[in-house]
Length: 155
Figure (cartoon, rainbow, N blue to C red):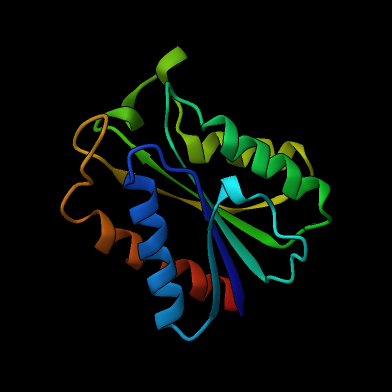
């Protein structure tokens, strides 16, 4: 399987999660391209699956991550799976109302609205403060989630 991992990172935490995802994808024998969303959508999207990540900022994804998803929708990606991941502050998942929501959920909604097929699983990695660092077990949890997601994609 050929996998693209694209991320937007403000303080390096989402990049660390993207690198952990990339490490797990490679360790399971898959081809991989890791890139920032700032590099744009690859001209040739010959991948079987994609992971896209963003930090959660005020219950939303960052602008560059949203623009990346919109461009993927216009690229002809179609129904191939996209898994969304994010970094969040502690307690974000319990928030309701205006402060409720995470980048990965919002990106999934955007993708669905644009005719894409977001994977049922989203990945959240917790940072200990606004600028990080990641919680101690965040990288291990991300790798375990990727293992499960890759197994589900092979079915």
